[in-house]
Length: 362
Image: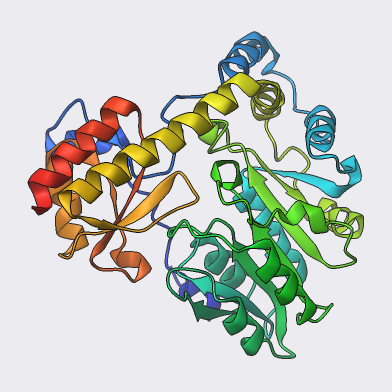
């Protein structure tokens, strides 16, 4: 076909989410494998969410509530923000896309940490704007580097906190200093997909800056701590002026009926959330202690995943771990050719991971 495709679209490298567990097992001829590559909740979904979804199956002939009234009301009550400050998305990815579509155009620039969540770059490029990459500093987001790179072309800044794939966080003190030097015209997007797992008492909770008279947007998701990754449901918290604009470009039924019902129930399931957070913290402590005993270098984290320096080709380690039935993530595509990323699993999965990595890299 003789298609005329804009250069900014052709420049996009497709996002690689990793192959499904079943496909990898077929490809490698293995079974009983464990997946520790996608930062998912190994406990499964919230039981209350699963039950609510089962009860709603017979409603699938109906469109979902396009306004997301019930879910937005539950979120607003939990976080003590106004419903008018919330926009739902088909995962927080969709909100990133809406923001880029709304605020960016050719000639604009968006500043991104590098490496960080790959969808920022893809959505910026889709708008025809340019991505400006600020390398991490000691695996942490370099706020000073971001400030120094702001120009009249800068329209948007992304801060992933905790950062994916490094698990590091921005402190409240550093963020407040950062805000003072950012022009009012620049939109700041803080992605807090993993905030439930943070143990650092000095961490930034960007929702607290909602009324700061800044164009500051917080992104959160039900995919991680709430175990609803398969439903694709996230949300953004932002000034009412911006929600009004996003609702102009948002598809009317972007959050599915089952996603809304499941998320509403998950918010009520405090027992499951607490169980998940305890499991992650206990799992991290176990994995870190085990790696210390083995003399394998890793990096502290505030998320449910962390990086390990395997000191050899990460793609090769990925392949060898896979043959042990353990699926992890190579960080070569993120610019760390000798690092892997692993997320916390169930207790027995964590033990299996340690046994496998000992066999593969020692």
